[in-house]
Length: 219
Image (cartoon, one colour):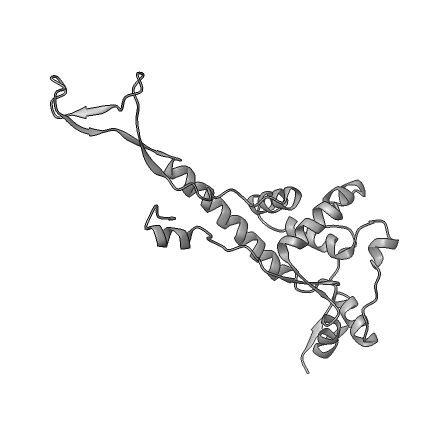
């Protein structure tokens, strides 16, 4: 039988892990982040306790997995975090540590979402559209075949609102945020009380609308 080593040097069986996982709550990574930073205030609590980038006492949850697998039941308590020096759920501590292992951009995007609950703006329903450039008198600014005579207009000057470059940049940032969320799902597969899923948000939500309208390309 395949065995997994934890930090204590003990072996945890796949059967023990499977038994334990039956008692974990499935939660989308987005909801888990809101809980970690809004309800648990993980960053503020750990900072108050003087915990650095790597929270003191952070360990693999394989010990808890083995314990609950052997007992055949989930122990409903906050573990060492409740009775120790850091008064947060061990899963919230683990989530915060996982976030701090990412790039500065990913950390900023993830924590901003976690604290505000707001998805990065990707200009929903705001596709770049051409609008005429207006003169001071409110009339469209024209270019002429003969600039000196200005008798035969060639075309009206236009600009895009919003700017194409602004929309593309915002959507690249959105994808960076989504990829960071997906990376967290991979990092958080051995939490004590939560089975992490998602992200529930689409990676490129603008694509279907653009295919239907045949409008501004996303990339």
